[in-house]
Amino acid sequence: MITLDEIYTPLEEARNEIRQRWANQELRQKVEEFLGGEPPGVNSGPRAFFCRPVHTPNREFHRFIDLASDAYIAPALMEYLDDRFCSMNSDKLNLVRMTLLKGLNHRGEPIFQRKMITDSIPEGMPFTSIRTLWGENLVDFHHRSLRTLFPSLVTENESAWLHIQGVSAREFYPAHLARFICHGILFESFLETSDEFVFTKDVVLPMFKTVCSLFDAKPLIVRLLPEESADDPSWTWYEGDIWNIVNKELKTASGSRHSTPHFEVNI
Image (cartoon, rainbow, N blue to C red; front, side, top):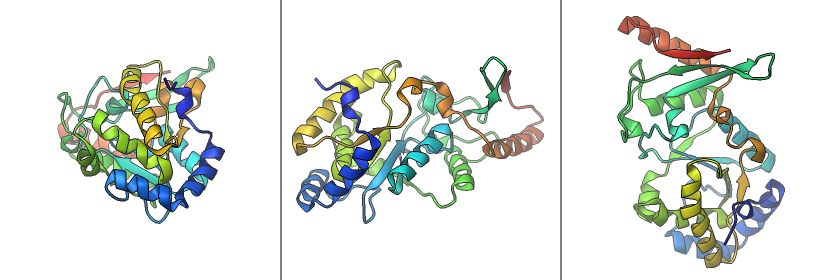
């Protein structure tokens, strides 16, 4: 049985290995035959993959950009925009309940401000159908925020490709992981201390083993977050200029609705 620690590859090793594998035409052909062609996100060379339902410039995203820069590999920002809202998933919830990390108090505790940027959302609503309090599509808002801080970066919706590979995560996960044999490096942290570990144990680890057997090589996965703080919720919080955008839009929404948007402060 493969353990969680065994799926990761150190950054420097992955950086060197992906270049060797990319140059292996026989291996690339074998992978692309399995995938039904070249996977999305690849353009004339291997990429640093970061996969989320919707990309947003939170602290986790900044961490990824730093690691991709250290690897000297261009980022591939893949999105699953067909995904749906689930309030039990903290990553998804934090797309509509944004938290600004403002610093630390004298006890070393975080000072933060949290604001809802949407009305109540039914469970299972597609992200592409959600609108902010000021009427903007939620996905468009997060993309606009991303472009403000990273104007040269482009996201890519891989929903259609994943659906071709299978209708459930268990079905499409072998193809998802096979991309990281020779087409790129996945930057991700799989958690052991949260509800996500059920998915990791039942899907990620078995499918990782399957892909290793298929290609006699392990998918290249670099740990995204430091192991000691990977489950820290503040990785999905925001810092800096992004809050100017949020405050401006909420002020507009408040004026048009004659109400004050809900917010919480921790000091």
